[in-house]
Image (cartoon, rainbow, N blue to C red; front, side, top):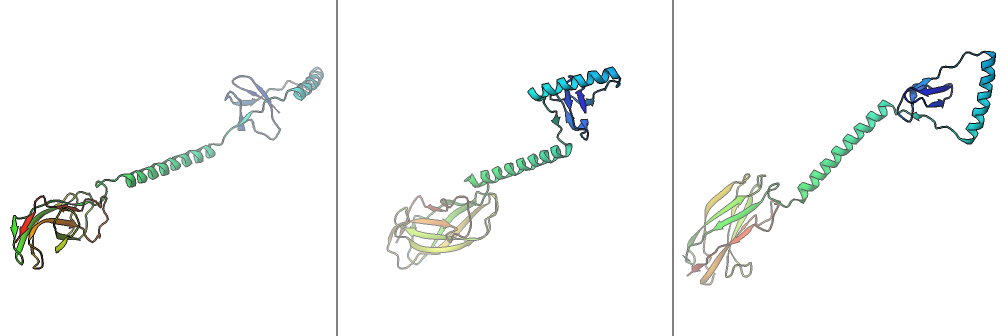
Length: 224
């Protein structure tokens, strides 16, 4: 069955059981069945001659076959698949971006912002230590412990345990100002000591930054 492009006039040969509407020309035009001339004796002879010529030409140069049209359903399925694939990719990228950011914006982050000590303190007597603790994250912290220590220098060597308190849950950006009181141990050697404060000293809370949980007083207290 011969068909012809309605746009450019290109001709194609289809099988009898093939539907021209299932194909399209290379130029994108629709295919229509070519009108056949009335079969007269003269036209039959001309047709036979044309067939012989066309067979010889086809043996030398096989004509292009029309392009098969993609079904609308397959296009729709493919488009939906692409959209879903892109959504998954975007979600994965966002998850990795959040995990990669080392910032208190996304997690809990407890920090001791200030600790103050008196100028002197007596062995076996009560000492008052004002201190401030803040949650820099957006998630609530939950309860934890805060440990206080004496130390001859501003480091963790030769520390002397002073006491421990319980800190209740802090919300996002919440600040806790408190006056913490302890009794100076009787077995301590008189001298000057800094105060070391460690929030979440038992590592009970997962934080974005675990390296900012302690602070040393800027001045030392003279224990006499």
